[in-house]
Length: 315
Ligand code: NAD
Image (tube, rainbow, N blue to C red; front, top):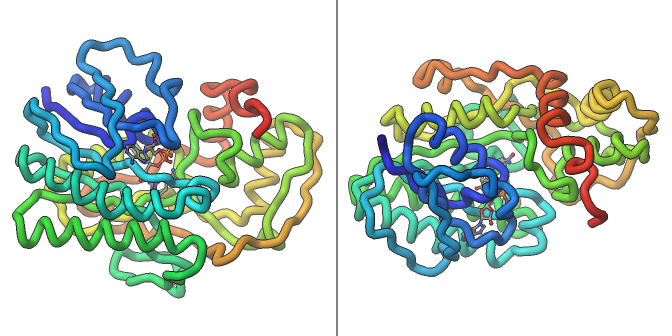
């Protein structure tokens, strides 16, 4: 049994990670100040091997008991959150990552950072390989998130090269599943919420921009495989099947049997036109690839989350 510390463990991905680590027999310390997460995501966990510490990792923090793995997920992650919390986003990516790397160093723990496909910005290489350096507007409104993650990756490599910390960098592409918040502004929870209420589905631009959607169970399997691999360079984890936003809206209508119509709204600033992971490296070093197709993942999201939760209270 290993002890795993999960920052952001009460969030969407973090809570699924806590569940899976516990299922595999590990002890889990969840560090989360509930800034964008919720106790509702972890209240079902009853095992004595689980503990939640309500700490803000922007401030220095320490854990006395030995830790074997550190999974660093804490950060606002949806555009609605990081546009509302720009300074917090920069601080959690910089100070929060610095403190968490220091903790991993002290415990000689393996450290994994949840980075993002947003480090590629509005990419000029398609699909994106890990060797691509990206195309990011540092001073645009989204820059707070993209640059925080780019800085966090640089800090992680510096701790690895200078301090010998055993680090991993996971570049996560769009992920969906139960426990996404209905009003977090991302395409799948928004479209599901609208479709389940037979309201118009709002597609940005003309809907021709593309995304690749990974179901959460696939993502978590890849995350644990990377943490347990000993690999140091960044690895893309995502589903390489690419869909336009219009295709996604139609898939959501099909799965929900909705009577919604599709309407078009202005494209947000610096919204990437294309996004698709090249996962050759993950296949090679982790033997990982996604298994859940979009339609099946949408069905599982509805079944596991329930219509009431997906519709949610008004924003
Ligand atoms: P989320 O907002 O649901 O979870 C983030 C968690 O971090 C929340 O529980 C929040 O309360 C916590 N947190 C934020 N600031 C904190 C602080 N200062 N101290 C302690 N806890 C803090 O987001 P998510 O979708 O689960 O994303 C998790 C990670 O994965 C993030 O780092 C995100 O950048 C990355 N990621 C997610 C996706 C995705 O599609 N969901 C894609 C790319 C990268």
